[in-house]
Length: 95
Image (cartoon, rainbow, N blue to C red):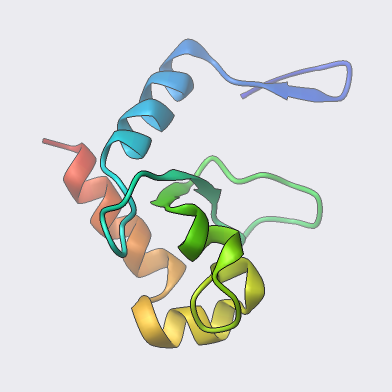
Protein backbone atom coordinates (compact mmCIF):
# COMPACT_ATOMS: atom_id res chain seq x y z
CA UNK A 1 0.00 0.00 0.00
CA UNK A 2 1.16 3.49 -0.79
CA UNK A 3 0.70 6.17 1.86
CA UNK A 4 0.02 9.71 0.72
CA UNK A 5 -1.10 12.55 3.01
CA UNK A 6 -2.04 10.08 5.75
CA UNK A 7 -4.19 7.97 3.42
CA UNK A 8 -3.38 4.41 2.42
CA UNK A 9 -3.88 3.89 -1.28
CA UNK A 10 -4.00 0.43 -2.82
CA UNK A 11 -1.70 -0.54 -5.60
CA UNK A 12 -3.19 -2.03 -8.77
CA UNK A 13 -1.95 -5.49 -7.70
CA UNK A 14 -3.53 -5.15 -4.23
CA UNK A 15 -6.84 -4.04 -5.74
CA UNK A 16 -6.78 -7.03 -8.13
CA UNK A 17 -6.06 -9.42 -5.25
CA UNK A 18 -8.83 -7.93 -3.08
CA UNK A 19 -11.27 -8.31 -6.00
CA UNK A 20 -10.22 -11.96 -6.39
CA UNK A 21 -10.80 -12.53 -2.66
CA UNK A 22 -14.28 -10.95 -2.80
CA UNK A 23 -15.18 -13.11 -5.82
CA UNK A 24 -14.66 -16.23 -3.67
CA UNK A 25 -17.72 -15.37 -1.60
CA UNK A 26 -17.83 -15.57 2.18
CA UNK A 27 -15.21 -18.00 3.48
CA UNK A 28 -17.79 -19.22 6.03
CA UNK A 29 -21.02 -19.52 4.02
CA UNK A 30 -20.23 -18.67 0.34
CA UNK A 31 -22.69 -15.74 0.22
CA UNK A 32 -21.56 -12.50 -1.53
CA UNK A 33 -18.64 -11.08 0.43
CA UNK A 34 -16.82 -7.94 1.45
CA UNK A 35 -13.22 -7.59 2.62
CA UNK A 36 -12.30 -8.18 6.25
CA UNK A 37 -8.81 -6.96 7.20
CA UNK A 38 -7.26 -9.30 9.74
CA UNK A 39 -6.74 -7.74 13.14
CA UNK A 40 -4.29 -10.43 14.22
CA UNK A 41 -0.84 -8.80 14.17
CA UNK A 42 -2.09 -5.36 13.11
CA UNK A 43 -1.42 -2.32 15.29
CA UNK A 44 -4.13 -0.02 16.56
CA UNK A 45 -5.61 1.95 13.69
CA UNK A 46 -3.68 -0.11 11.13
CA UNK A 47 -5.34 -2.01 8.30
CA UNK A 48 -3.68 -5.27 7.50
CA UNK A 49 -2.91 -6.25 3.91
CA UNK A 50 -4.00 -9.75 4.96
CA UNK A 51 -7.70 -10.12 4.15
CA UNK A 52 -10.46 -12.71 4.10
CA UNK A 53 -13.88 -12.58 2.42
CA UNK A 54 -16.85 -12.36 4.78
CA UNK A 55 -20.51 -11.66 4.02
CA UNK A 56 -22.05 -8.72 5.92
CA UNK A 57 -23.63 -11.17 8.39
CA UNK A 58 -20.34 -12.86 9.29
CA UNK A 59 -18.40 -9.58 9.07
CA UNK A 60 -20.40 -7.06 11.12
CA UNK A 61 -24.18 -7.61 11.20
CA UNK A 62 -24.65 -11.08 12.68
CA UNK A 63 -24.26 -10.47 16.39
CA UNK A 64 -22.08 -12.21 18.97
CA UNK A 65 -20.78 -15.59 17.82
CA UNK A 66 -21.80 -14.93 14.21
CA UNK A 67 -20.08 -11.66 13.19
CA UNK A 68 -16.34 -11.31 13.71
CA UNK A 69 -16.70 -7.66 14.77
CA UNK A 70 -19.30 -8.60 17.39
CA UNK A 71 -16.86 -10.90 19.18
CA UNK A 72 -13.74 -12.31 17.55
CA UNK A 73 -13.17 -15.13 20.06
CA UNK A 74 -16.73 -16.43 19.77
CA UNK A 75 -16.58 -16.14 15.97
CA UNK A 76 -13.29 -18.04 15.90
CA UNK A 77 -14.67 -20.76 18.18
CA UNK A 78 -17.51 -21.28 15.70
CA UNK A 79 -15.76 -20.86 12.33
CA UNK A 80 -11.98 -21.01 12.81
CA UNK A 81 -9.32 -18.43 13.58
CA UNK A 82 -8.54 -15.49 11.35
CA UNK A 83 -5.24 -17.15 10.48
CA UNK A 84 -6.92 -20.48 9.59
CA UNK A 85 -9.43 -18.67 7.38
CA UNK A 86 -6.59 -16.65 5.83
CA UNK A 87 -4.75 -19.86 4.89
CA UNK A 88 -7.94 -21.22 3.31
CA UNK A 89 -8.39 -17.93 1.41
CA UNK A 90 -4.79 -18.00 0.16
CA UNK A 91 -5.18 -21.60 -0.98
CA UNK A 92 -8.38 -20.78 -2.90
CA UNK A 93 -6.89 -17.68 -4.55
CA UNK A 94 -3.68 -19.42 -5.60
CA UNK A 95 -5.50 -21.47 -8.26
